[in-house]
Image (cartoon, rainbow, N blue to C red; front, side, top):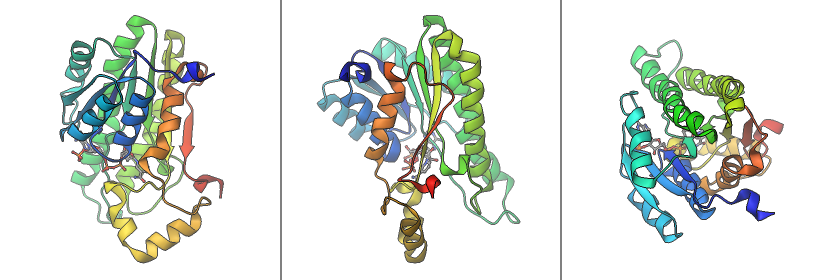
Length: 251
Ligand code: NAP
């Protein structure tokens, strides 16, 4: 039974792997046997050291994904350093908060460029490699705001709703090519991205009260879903947005 979740010998790109959810997912994939290309603008030294301690190969691939300039090189460098590419996890992302009446074009473009445009073009670069080899797994990181509106984060909601739509479109186009495209929608996870919310006593209490599990998620909570979607256990799962949210959407 465990064999269908085994990733031994597979190679995974994880973007934004130095911290938070990206680090949690990279280490879960490594624990399942995958070699890791830790992609990001900050060196993922800790992630790479921890992955190697789990007995897999791990390499840093430097890339600033605020533009699509590095996407082709990210795939080429991964293949060069680790000998292949089987799994892509599009995790790197940013958020900007302001009232919609005051929201700037800069805050719109920055979030859409990183969270949506670079995600599509990295899917495309990896997808070309995966289509040629006839197999691959792509996991995009969506959000509760792929389903809900939220407030004061218009470009973030637009980007994550876009990621959900894009995931379904790519699944439709690439399923017959042997590529599975799915997404994970994390609930409220304790990372740098949510420090401000955790520090705000009122918001923190309101959030925890609304989560059926009664606690913030930890980056490690995303690991099982990522291993599943990256493995042969998910070969017939396509275009699914898997919420890992302590029950937030169920309420
Ligand atoms: P985080 O700790 O802030 O991590 C974000 C990651 O993205 C970091 O590795 C960051 O690198 C990287 N990144 C940002 N801009 C980049 C760029 N231009 N080029 C390369 N890498 C870049 O936040 P997180 O919570 O783990 O977020 C990870 C993903 O989960 C994001 O897509 C986020 O939207 C999503 N998400 C988070 C939550 C949550 O509750 N935390 C909920 C739903 C979805 P640096 O360290 O160099 O900035």
